[in-house]
Image (cartoon, rainbow, N blue to C red; front, top):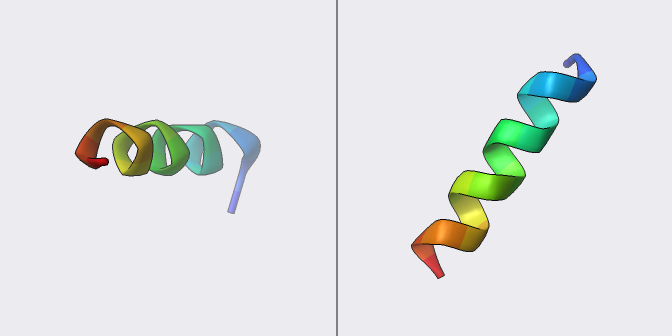
Length: 17
């Protein structure tokens, strides 16, 4: 997975929390 995809997933995870 590319960096951008990883960042998007991380942001979504933080947002959900």
